[in-house]
Length: 606
Image 1 (cartoon, rainbow, N blue to C red):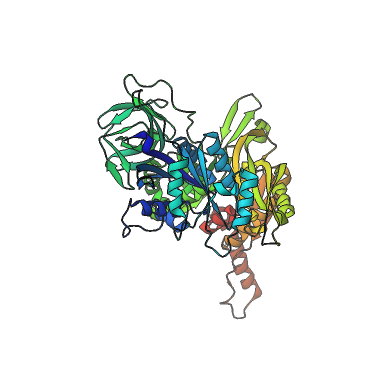
Image 2 (cartoon, rainbow, N blue to C red; image 1 turned 90 degrees about the vertical axis):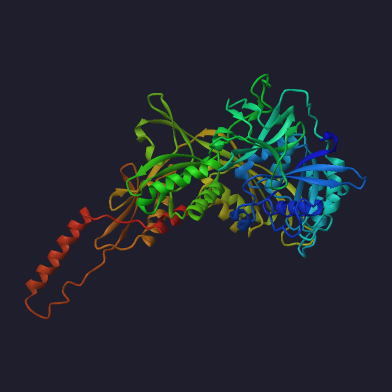
């Protein structure tokens, strides 16, 4: 295929700005799928993606387009995830392209992840085509958003395309601009093979299907190749491209985007970001800085029914075949039984994995409070990493604790600056700077838009921070964050005891000044959801042996005197004493079952 007639591009945007809808229109206009087969979100193959209106996995499709000049071009489109949790996959996707269509919602304007994606695209020297979407909606403000684009991103009005991806208005011009503005790939067919893996999925018949951009050389069916960083050796079972279903071809060459079937049994053997080269006389250096996706958030996953443990293990193993960023290891809890401590990219990733486990494998799950990885230096100088609060060393053995921090960017109308600054400060945020973006023309109520930049512990974002941000800004604020490193902090472990038994699933790591506040909130919430027993149940929050908060669930009372009609008072006393002794004995040998709702509600606790 002639490289000069090839264009490799992706679509980047904030969540719900219309990436997948624009991809649908491009597929429809180029005839990649018959109109009878087209449905909404063609490239979002999972039910979960369609229901939530988000892209979870990157998808690729080859489009054939005849331009106004009469030449036929091959356009390789890659639809990327928009959420910050999947930013590593987005960066690998951008590295596989020469250009990007930046979609901005005409009703919302520039959002936090819009800026994050633009900066990443600029780092990869991509040609960017700004597109203003949803201009058909009554609430759209194209003039205001065009001003923002000019002020913040530097693109003039003539550079921005006005479209409606839903109705198709203005979309044909997007295809022309792709051909005109995005450069052709510059690869050398004669050089040793180098291909970047930007995504992968597991196929039960062909093994791992690796999505690749061929930078140099040629790859054919039957070739023996290897991954430069991981060292995995592969015999190529099939080569092809997506249209959007898999279309086998004899070979792919420099400039092409397609896939290879590897026969590997897990995507963990074929990491995103690695470079494929020939087994013999291949390239020595990988294409760009490779690093495996690192889990940032950790949570325990347990089945409600202890008998379902083996089913849960099989489900997580199958899910991890398709998700290399999901890490897991067995753990056990005194209250919850056997389960797994899993590592995730972020809170959305936790939510998606748990929902897929429940939906696709018919499991009922309990998820513990999400936490982060701490680096602890003991008094003897030994350094350990801890992801489970129950594994924290005793306070007298800890020299210092380091935790991950993130740099956050919040874009909001200026009316909400005060309440949001107050909120972020309450969640331990450190102020960095304020940047003014643009003015609303029509909505005097909302005024100017502002970008607030803060640094805060990742731990603080894992509770209700995002919900509070949306609530206090009436839904107008948007959030983006990036990891900025580990910092030392004073922290303690807060345990929750139910009937004098530590429930490790509720343990949290908090600053010393917040233990009483968090402890009171947790015991009050648990008191609401733990059912009454036949004996008094104390719920306590404790730091080491010091109780910081307590609530009691009073015992159910059985009327043992109901059968006494008159008679001697000593008989009644005897029955009441017998009941008292029975309750005392029951308290020591009885166990309190903590319902699933209690775990879910403590999880949502701010």
